[in-house]
Length: 145
Image 1: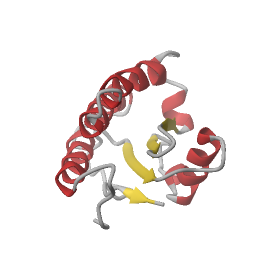
Image 2: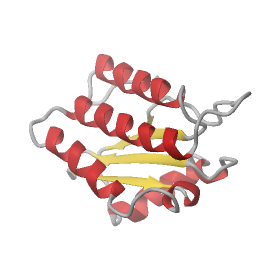
Image 3: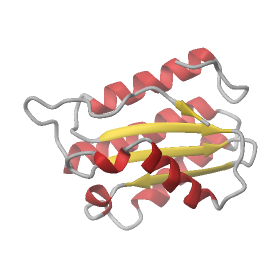
């Protein structure tokens, strides 16, 4: 794991990576978290750039989900690939963002991220259950920009 940010302690980062690992034990889906201080771009556009730079679009079932956070800007985006977007309820990403935002508003960023990861994992498990011989296609580590 790269060095910690003022946004999260090393312990919080380890908790987030563990939440990703646990969520992915039940699904063929892939979850990533990307942190950066800020962006001069529209947050969703920047999240899409990061999604592609992390090769999240290259998963076999198109079931990758990125949680992008620009922490100084106080912006975050949840970006799902085509396979998952076609299956989850229309309000799924908004309800997940609301859950995370409720923790972020109190300054509990680690719990917000862990809660969001767990909720995303549940949806991925529903629509993309773990397959026999499943391989972890993407790193669980937090990426930083």
